[in-house]
Image 1 (cartoon, helix red, strand yellow):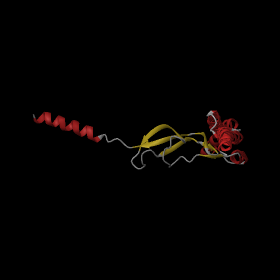
Image 2 (spheres, rainbow, N blue to C red):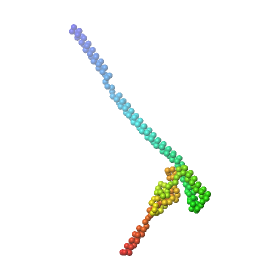
Image 3 (tube, rainbow, N blue to C red):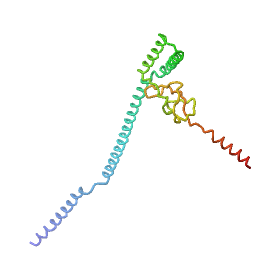
Image 4 (tube, rainbow, N blue to C red):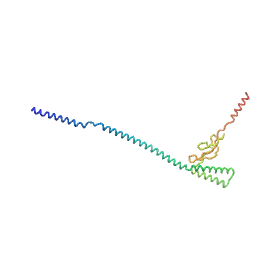
Length: 215
């Protein structure tokens, strides 16, 4: 009996050793994998972040280009409208000399006391000229009695006055005209200025002479 039990004991020991080795083999696949997968994930994240930054840059460029194009389109439309609106500026400016001559003829006829169909015809022609250019946006500049404005008036002389305020238009030599809201030709005017007091120097001179006599 004792020998039988001794014979079985070594076999059980061998079985236990085999089971232990099997257990150790089964645990090996559960060990953590190498860090290569973590590097790939970091690279993918960097690539994704870089792609998002490039997308944001492209969106910013698109927004700037869209805004610049809108501004360009508005400027082009405004320039086109101005070109149409002021297309006849040169022609209308040349017609102003004809209107000036008609006004001079009317003034000379009235000063000479001329009347009759000829005078009426000149006045009617002048009126029609003004109506025609008025339909195209031409209007006269307000000058006489108004304050001098360098954007509308061209001063050709100054006169001293005690009754008229300084920088006031006294007389108009040539009428000025607007084309819509742009000056077509400035008016040639005379402007009032303060009257110089010439009595003070003479009185001072007389005082000096009297002082010399007293001395």
